[in-house]
Length: 109
Length: 113
Image (cartoon, chains in turn purple, green):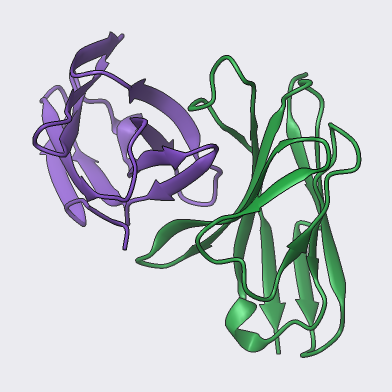
């Protein structure tokens, strides 16, 4: 079977740093990607890691440890507009993706 | 404007009445996928296509069909919809050089009564 685990909810204040973890158990692994989805909207791509280590894209960074089957998304200098759901997704093979259940981030003033 | 479009955006239908949800992208992407999203379950891939006439099952293909006759279009067909197919459906596309960077359509909310 395939499973990805993420915390269901995270709350933080404006200006803070928050980390959203993702652990996975999948039949194959080609990389881990992250998506943001605002209420009523479509998912939008944030970042991906195919190799171990940290990838930085502006205020967002993503980390992967393949030996631990673990990754995280780091959001810095949180803004109100970052309130959304965040999904990790594993590329299992070909173009087959398995998504996690999502983490709802609430940013408080 | 680069985009993925889906039609219809909202659909209410009855059990057993065949329907098609269209998906089109104008980015010349090789890869296209269909997902369904249900509360607490995230997105689950139904089918994907890596090129024209090349399609493969995702994790929840039962009750769905797809076709890829043209590069830009990837329709989702429900030949005999059932209430458990009530969901929010997303089409997505990506190019071969950046397969992880999927561009999603606006979604189609389907209700089957």
